[in-house]
Image 1: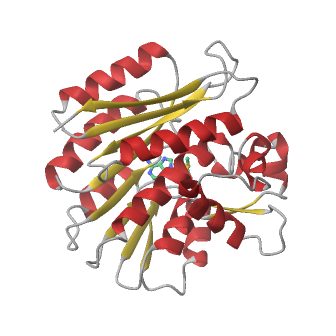
Image 2: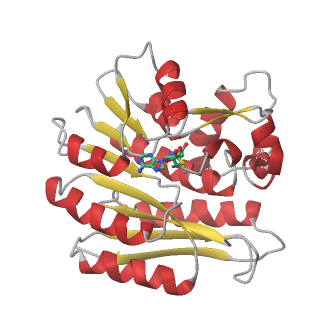
Length: 279
Ligand SMILES: C[S@@+](CC[C@H](N)C(=O)[O-])C[C@H]1O[C@@H](n2cnc3c(N)ncnc32)[C@H](O)[C@@H]1O
């Protein structure tokens, strides 16, 4: 039984952290002519209506996309992401928020391919409807970890895997580290992006140790904190990127510092950019 529904959280600060990074990774893949593959293991519904009751319940988008929506001073690196959000809202009101598979669909070229998997039946059906007429996109009702086994390595031999779990099970961190180890054995040269919530220093240190123990190299870690560590909710979130593009660390540091200044609550938190493992 899945308890998490992204409907309640769409456009929150975690989305506004992960989706610009996703956008930059896909734009980097677009730099080369050869086709690539994008796998979204925990895909959600693709497009979220923020005017619906579930989004209005906690109005999480208020501390996320709403804080960026009207800004006209965003750094150049953030603009492609905001352009995608704005393209969903041609009338100028921030009502629809694009999830990761829709962001990817906007960025891939005719030669590229997406597989999006989702375990919630209702959400998966919605995503299938959204992409029904796009032959570049395949949507499957499937467990995200099975999806890694089923789809890697891809025939394109280049591309990106987003693992964006809802972390609604205990020991999800250990499960993800194990899944990454196996996926990386199948496909060593792929780019992997893995989102995680900052659930406490001990949990995160354990996760970092598990990742190091996989022996995987070129592991870059980003974190964005917008609340004090003793806040009643998670103070921030992180993203692990394996095989990032050239200079991704320095470019994203600037972007994340700007995001922190836009999203931080009363100046709390900060940004972390570190290599967990290099070449
Ligand atoms: C954080 S949301 C994904 C959001 C989406 N990646 C985005 O950025 O728009 C996590 C999703 O994973 C789904 N999910 C939970 N467990 C899963 C599993 N084992 N395999 C695939 N999907 C799963 C949930 O139903 C939820 O839609």
